[in-house]
Length: 110
Length: 118
Image 1 (cartoon, each protein chain N blue to C red):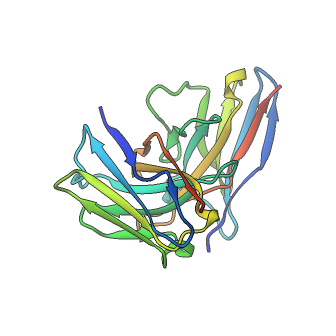
Image 2 (cartoon, chains in turn cyan, orange):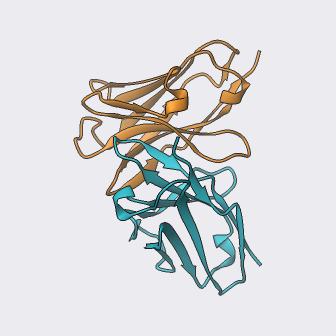
């Protein structure tokens, strides 16, 4: 079964830049997986940040950007703010209308 | 504006069947542009994709859940549904219904907590 990997946790200083990654246990991530990224704060439904690798969802600040770096999808936050402290999840599509979530990254801003 | 609203029992007994419905408003479930899906999140844990359905009725299920899951669509009511049989405490989670496409990301319902307990 396909396993999508993410860093369990990450820390960034306010104003700093952080790159979270999304990989595959076997193989490389490409744009064909249509990687997307979601932000979730406790008690809330996830919010869509990025889809189709690098397209920002409506209303998402441009400090969030998506890409494929090497063999992984990446979410970069430039100029991190306190309210960016959240859980971040990626999704990869394996074809056939089924997505697979990564395990999520807990981002701390301090 | 598109809205997705989950409905169904908040408490299900072990070994019984969990049934949820998602009512779609502000958009047509018959659109060929999107899939419709169910995603869940156990308390304190990550998100898990359960399965998806296309308006035509084609379904796609997570392999480890496939033997217990059925997703169906009712275009006349603009609804789609989740049925999960033989539930255990491990199925306790917030269940989200969602609309998605490769080119649009996931549009989320607000989620509903289902607890499996006797």
